[in-house]
Image (spheres, rainbow, N blue to C red):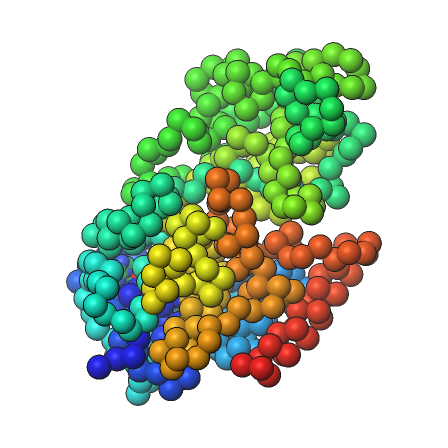
Length: 436
Ligand SMILES: Cc1cc2nc3c(=O)[nH]c(=O)nc-3n(C[C@H](O)[C@H](O)[C@H](O)COP(=O)(O)OP(=O)(O)OC[C@H]3O[C@@H](n4cnc5c(N)ncnc54)[C@H](O)[C@@H]3O)c2cc1C
């Protein structure tokens, strides 16, 4: 009988299985393919990359490069295979996707302590089963498992679409143009406002209407919720629509002119340190290049550095701040761990990293050891902090970025910041690893 069960043989599930098995624990890994396929998966192999073959930057001075470096130091199977199957891609780590998935499948199935079962699991384990379980069924979790998960978390804490608005580095905002004020408020307020004249608004909507969009996949037929329509879809309803929606200026007086602008784009702090700002109501399906071009037409955002760009796609994920503990155990049932995209992170590398942590902790729980949480200065710690320390009502999945890390507490040139953070993180990780 296996010590732990892992449901889902994707990126997170395979990494979790490897980490647990390498710690001497026996694993039963359940994967529904090839009996049943998600709408995006095409092969029978484990750890299939469903879209791009890029794991993004490999530079440890970038946040995602640092996350990968930490994973290597935590003996990640998927990072090892990614390095072995890499293809030339400049500063990025891209892989030959077929070789990548094939080698992960080979390594997982050859491990003496991992037993792979090709079956769909339709229900979470009941109270009688006290073995740790990791649920890593991904953004396209099968419908039956989704129903079982909804019963555990409550429907309010499970989402099926991401509607992500871009996030901007605060240091790149032009505060000579932007003013701070909340609607109907005379004080400084919580929002930053980019004021627009009528002419600037008309130019902006013309460019927005003509900008390139990411095509929808078959299973992504737009079923937008009214509350999170893409900005360009809202514009299709009429040239004035945005003036009554996310760009409405009422109640906002620009202290520099003493007048209400024709239109306003509002920015809301994304973190407590106010180093990142979210473009309120600007969820979008524009391509990344077009987002940068069109949104930089907004006064005050001419030199905006985007920490994250907007997107809308099918994605099953929990409201992590309500559902998860920092160990990735669910609050409701400490034997149940969530990993991968389902836990509320975004991206191949981030999903794998959450599999790695869940694997370590499920193995520790099976061996009656205390669960662990990575230090806050590390990229792993920053992701966990985003999952469990974010404001629940506004929680959205996130890629790793330096804005999720604790504030540095001192001024530094931008190009030095990444290197400094990486050195700090890797030192802290080494000390943590020694204790483990
Ligand atoms: C269409 C699409 C494109 C994406 N493109 C990118 C991209 O280009 N770059 C990027 O960084 N991220 C991308 N992502 C986001 C994310 O990084 C990937 O989805 C990533 O694979 C998530 O890893 P995971 O382990 O959480 O889930 P997955 O890798 O999807 O693994 C989940 C596994 O669970 C299995 N499964 C599901 N339900 C059950 C069940 N009930 N029982 C047993 N097995 C089950 C599935 O078959 C699958 O193998 C994309 C997501 C989607 C949906």
